[in-house]
Length: 102
Image (tube, rainbow, N blue to C red; front, side):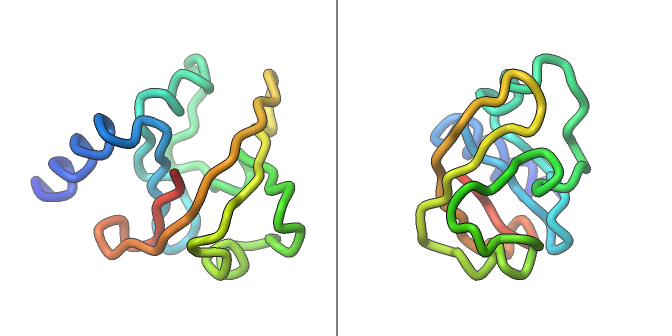
């Protein structure tokens, strides 16, 4: 577990807008800037696609289709107020046992 925590600490500094997802699409870690977007709302262990609406590509409806976008730009919006719009990219990650969205 220590390696995972170290990896998270590194990402928190160099990619403060990242979100780590497990293979089921649940948020297992989020960078400090992303955490500020939720202003105290609980988002850890929530499903990424329940927290963010994927605007583009439109074909993203589940974790499998989200993973298929790896390396391509994602346009997304926070589902709760304020409905902040963000751009990012997803890459599969064995460290997260799923993927990282930055």
